Length: 171
Image 1 (cartoon, rainbow, N blue to C red):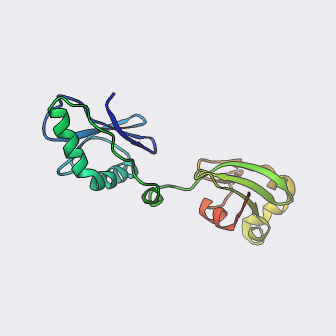
Image 2: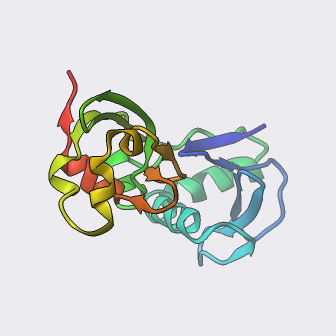
Image 3: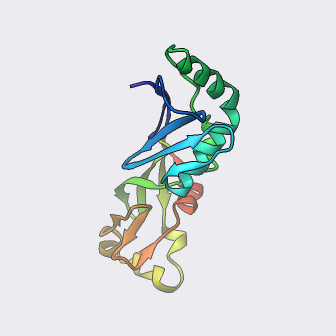
């Protein structure tokens, strides 16, 4: 397949002998769309966040995409185009806890989807309200992961960004 770029599960294709107007194909999980290069019109569906990233990438690489379009119209293979830069992606990335391990006392070792591993002491966070339940060590150790963060019985869950900031990096 004539893949020209790939970033964060988004794959961009261009095909030889494709129809006008100039466009590229986007595939993300089970979503498929065609994006028209000159005006950004979309045919198909993509999640809003994915579409935002594709538009960002399109804005950065419009000239290269049009050159690729000329190539495929002349029966030449399209060339690869740089993926969306990671510092730009940080605006789109949703921080999530991907793994959690009990260490001791009220400390968990958390792994985040950006690759960071941090030790988080929950002691300061369990002084008020429902969070007092975490003082019971058996309850504390009964955590699970929901799609975003550490969870206790669907009652208590801390924002992953807060845990990230409070955590101490593991070297």
